[in-house]
Length: 72
Image (cartoon, rainbow, N blue to C red; front, side):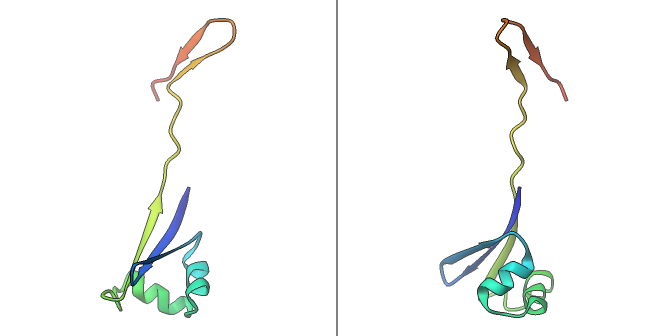
């Protein structure tokens, strides 16, 4: 799962894409790309990409009492 997060004056805004974040903030998508990629307005707006990896199941036990351990 990934999403974009912007912090402006202590408030946090979240959106699935940079374009959606720009629409939520009421600015042009090209302007938000300038903020993120070119560090414009860095002192006012902090934008970061958040990626959360789902936890992998390494141990599983079924109803018969057998279990399986994964090493990948």
